Length: 223
Ligand SMILES: CCCCCCCC/C=C\CCCCCCCC(=O)OC[C@H](COP(=O)(O)O[C@@H]1[C@H](O)[C@H](OP(=O)(O)O)[C@@H](O)[C@H](O)[C@H]1O)OC(=O)CCCCCCC/C=C\CCCCCCCC
Ligand SMILES: Nc1ccn([C@@H]2O[C@H](COP(=O)(O)O)[C@@H](O)[C@H]2O)c(=O)n1
Ligand SMILES: [Mg+2]
Ligand SMILES: [Mg+2]
Image 1 (tube, helix red, strand yellow):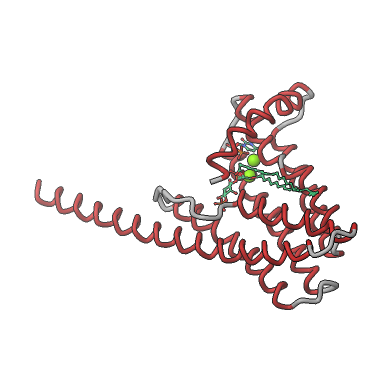
Image 2 (spheres, helix red, strand yellow):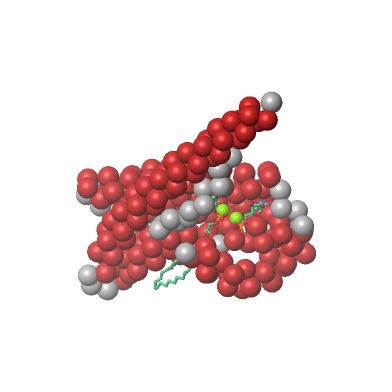
């Protein structure tokens, strides 16, 4: 949903910055790599210490690079298969670091086995949700479904909640419970999305195979 409705807005906002980087001779791949490194550092340095506010600030500074890199590639007329591969692969690395950072906190100072497990579930289910689309498309299916919770939703829900939960350290009472609530929402939403995508791939593959059988019968009859 966010990918559909918010992308156009962020494209307008980020286009001048993308153009500025192009003028400075920066390449889209550099933005992809530095952006991912920043997200990974923010997540794995701050979150395991329970520093949710500063971790989210650092991640937010870098995570929009994922919208800037593609914007730059399009402005340059240089969108490439390699760029698409690098972008998607490093998305998985960034997501692993964010939910891994939450899991490390709950396994350590946060001392909550259930929330550690929910964080690991968010990490794994998010990766599998993305994999269903990549694998479905690689076997020639359209995978014409995005589902309830795509990557943008996973990130926005968990990062907004983490940033706000971090304000507890500055004396805001009660707000720390936002992060557990968000993790449960992302976990359930990812599971629903996974089911939506698997059901779609199953239907599309049955339809594709039925069409192939029909085509084979047609050419047999024509002989
Ligand atoms: C006082 C409190 C202070 C709090 C501190 C800071 C709070 C910060 C809060 C939020 C920041 C959230 C930012 C999240 C931005 C996410 C942007 C982003 O990178 O989205 C990526 C997404 C997907 O891009 P791709 O097409 O490159 O990726 C594809 C995708 O990964 C597919 O995965 P799948 O969906 O299938 O699981 C893969 O299949 C595919 O391989 C891959 O290529 O981009 C978008 O979707 C575009 C839309 C982005 C919309 C961003 C909206 C941000 C909205 C609000 C932020 C403002 C919040 C304000 C908070 C205020 C809090 C007080
Ligand atoms: N280093 C890169 C990164 C991205 N691309 C192209 O942009 C598409 C992704 O667009 P986003 O707005 O989601 O970043 C990707 O599929 C590539 O076509 C690129 O070429 N090089
Ligand atoms: Mg990108
Ligand atoms: Mg991306």
